Image (cartoon, rainbow, N blue to C red):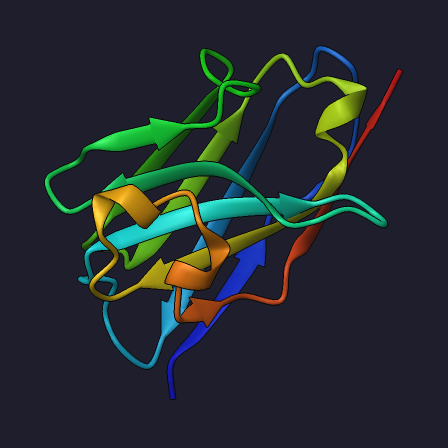
Length: 125
């Protein structure tokens, strides 16, 4: 059974860094798109970053230049390096995998079939 598990969340001061990881079990992360989304309390789940086969990356404007998404196919993991963190980055972060995600839907949560349970990131001011 496909499972995704996030790790690396925590509490950090504004300006600090965290690195999130997403490990897959059950099969390899060879599908088209892998992504990170985040959800703050009482708000909708929002796109953060995505990476397609071939290494093409996409970022939300709010994180562009601060976050870096990467994948390690050999280790079967997805990562999100988060730098210069801000209090508004506070949220639960989810990794997602989508077979057959088309480019026009890459920022849409409904396009992804598999999700992790999420990891909390809290940035204090």
